[in-house]
Amino acid sequence: MIEHLDIKLRLLILASPFCLGLLSLAADVHIACSSQYAKMAKALSRSKCLSYAVALWGEKNIRSRLLVIFMITGAITFPKSSIRRGILDARDYDQLPSNLRTKLVVASWTSTIGFIWITINYFLI
Image 1: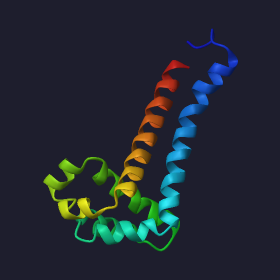
Image 2 (image 1 turned 60 degrees about the vertical axis):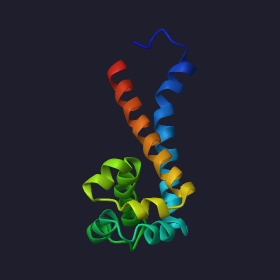
Image 3 (image 1 turned 120 degrees about the horizontal axis):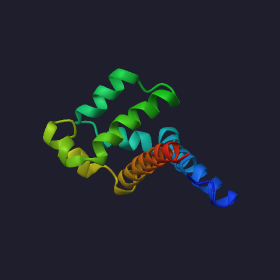
Image 4 (image 1 turned 135 degrees about the vertical axis):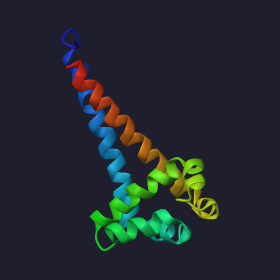
């Protein structure tokens, strides 16, 4: 379906979602390796999502911290639903630093858009 396009444009269309996914992963790794993880854990101390994720995955290495971040990001991305279901505490959500909250939400949506884009590319090619 994209055979009529220039090769550079085709490469851009195919490579862009992978770049988005890697950008999102890099942001999450930065949070996991920096003091932002401790700030996030301190701010979300009353929320069930943090205690559940830490009990499930632990926090000893980068992989487990990333998995905790992924679970928390799901709750932070949709706060009204998470607060209503009791997964996220409203005070914890307000205490979370706004730059960290923004970074988590942007990383979440970036990876989601990248995944959707890869899926569309699969069916186009």
